[in-house]
Length: 141
Image (cartoon, rainbow, N blue to C red):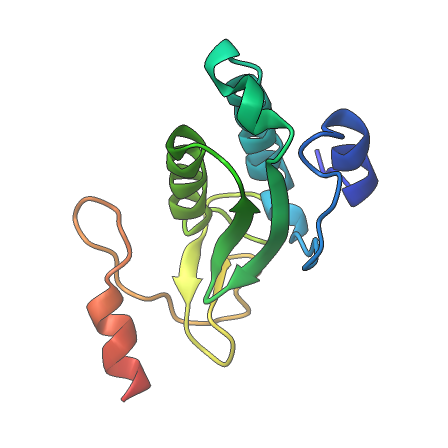
């Protein structure tokens, strides 16, 4: 299900109270970021994070180099870990539709499924499924 900016602001008002650098979320990652938002809210609601809760805010959500960037201010390390997991997952989810995707060559680097790749060649992945960043850097030279 695609979630719009207003959906996030309504469901998670404390998290998205002042996104001051932009909320530009590709449709295919809306479920990923919705789950991340639920996890962040759960973490902020923990008693040990009560003092941090009022100062936490999302600064920016965007795509960069084919991956999710979820920038925040004022959060505990436990939230940083949740964000790190989601950002890594985004490299395996089509940013257009949410189906499994691969990092693709050809102009802007994007994570796309076969259907939305328009014939773009995929960057190699390692045996563990992670992006082979060395091949990406080789292409840049």
